[in-house]
Structures are given as C-alpha cells and as structure tokens.
Image (cartoon, rainbow, N blue to C red):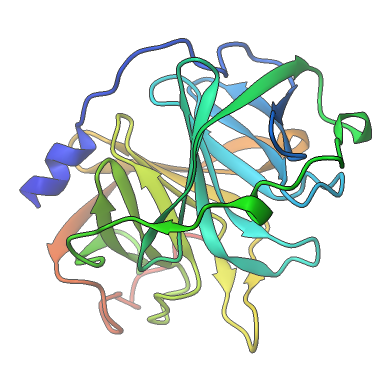
Length: 271
C-alpha cells in the first residue's frame, strides 16, 4: 500500500502541453495515417482517435491536459468490438509521444519518440494520408519486463467494482471488474503515476467471441486522501463530464479474484 501511495504522488517534468489551448484541434501522427481530434476542459483532454484511418473518430480517448499530458482508451472497432489492448499516448517535449499498451496482464511498448503535429479545427477526411501505414499496424510490440504481474486489488468503498492492479515504472495497468461478476480479463485499464495519477479504459461487456464496448471511455483521476473522481467522454462532440466526485477507495495486497467485490453495493456505472 505504501508503494502505491508513493507512485501516485510521483513527480513529473514540466513542459508545454500539446493541450494548452481549449478549442477543437486535430493531431497528426507524422509517420502514420492516424489522426486524433481533441479538445480540452479544465485539466482534461478528450476526443477521438481514427486508429484505422477510416475517417472514424468514435474510438474516444481521455487523459490529462496539463501535468503529464496523455490520452488513453481501450481500442474499439467500428462495429463496437473491443480489441485486445488498452493504450496510452504519453506526450513528451519536442512534440514527441510514446505509445504504451496492456492486455491487463502485461505492459507493451508499442512506439517510442514518435513525432506529431497539431492543426486548428476538428479532423476530417482532408486529414487522412492513406499513403502512410496505421500506427497499430506498425507497432513494435515489445513486452516490458515487469517484476510482478498485477498483484494488488483496488476496492471502491461505496461500490462493488474492483480493479486488479500492477505497475511498470511510471505506468499503472490491470483489469476493471466494472460489472462485479469477477471478470478480470475483458476491461483492461492503463494509466500513469504522475500527478494526477489516473487509470483509463473503455469497459466491455463479456460475450462469446469479442466483448462489446461500453458507450464511453472512462478515467479514474486519483486525489490525495485516497479519493478519486471518475470522468467520461464519447468524443469531442459529446464533451466530457464527471460521473463520480471525491469517492473513497482502498488497496489490498494480492490480485483481485472472484468474490472480492461486495455485490450488496451498487455498481459504479449502471447501464
């Protein structure tokens, strides 16, 4: 528990955030056909990632706009099936980004020190450059050495949800049992420890074959005194809104297992 508190209060290097202005804009990944349309609201950045280069920005992303700027989501196909990975863009000085991913059990480094540019206005078909590959088709899937698989369990005091949680360097990762059914494989989640520490995903419904995606990308933003806020977005057009505010949580040693959630309590997200 002490280790997690230290991680959640970790320091970050200050630099000019790519999200320093509040207005719809389009991020172009220089070496790839992908674009991300985004906007900001206070300390949050949100939008949609056209990761298939189809002119489809419905894979919503959410992250921190100021300190340790990032955008994260659980990847979704146009037919609303979830892909294997939750992913996180970590933005660096010099208009560079790293891309990380997790399946909930392991962390992967997909890209390092990749350039990007930003133009005014929301993305459109004019922004597609199909002469370039998509980012995920050319990812360098490198498994990052992790001393332990997810080995802690995050309990939400007023809700039945639990998150099995691990860390690799400044990354947090794991799986969110958001339906309180002991499912720690469907809704992988990823974030970072730099303040405000966060965990982000687009949760999924278990089903035969692929799990279907929930309508919104959700982000836990952790506060001091073991409190968190929960935010959601469906993309630039839907805005970003706060679902829960200053809710308590605890962390126990050992990965979550079926039965860890107290089903006498409500779920944090109701259908």
